[in-house]
Length: 304
Image (cartoon, rainbow, N blue to C red; front, top):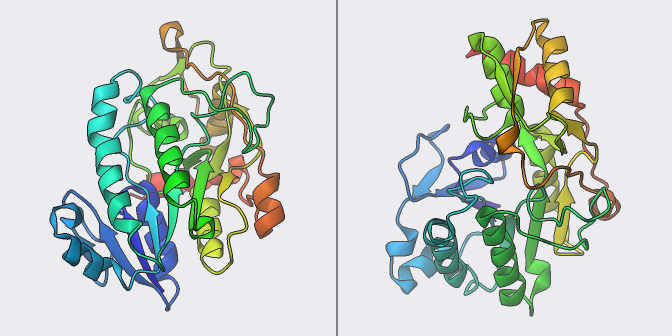
């Protein structure tokens, strides 16, 4: 099976690549607009798909079985208020990729949306896939817009499209960004002997999913029919920032100094995903507990 990862050089793309390459029957192509280092020599890289002619695009895509669209150049925090920037660096490239992909009659597409940022905070929790959407940031607006474009473009072939709404994915390989990835940041603070800044009162709740659980689902989905289009992918359990700090202290056996930043309280205070739909259709559920996942991430971080 030939898999193309658009945005394959990021955290999730690299983890998916490693998962697929552990099997002998995958050919992997990364499609990226920037120079990235390859984890394996047998990964093919295409840097300029959007700059090629329609004929050349079709030739490159004709033998691809499944495309994972993972590319995103902003995060919920960095893409909070600048709509023009979100459109320029995310929506416009996405529309050009979609134009090329939809021409391929036998290609299936898995799009990575966001289960952590697009649901209306007024929804009862855990949120199902049919719950109301409400963009609290320009990043979320972009994700909702791209979902809309996709469902319209694939309305006559819906079984060729899957939209995944993952919760907060974390684990080994995640780069350190102080504004994104609270578990990774907390462990880095332990490593550096620094305090961690908690948003607001620290009671913001998120659904955290270990990276191996996410890649396991993606691998499973490749071998099955897709009975529906949109799926939440999460643990189905909520943990506050304070909870995370407590688990980090327990795992590392070190104290984590904490500061509070009231002015950076997130627009979405609580988010937990209902994952009964994906469990029913695919028999999948997260296997790695929060403590186990943080321990695995800590072990990776210390071994670097």
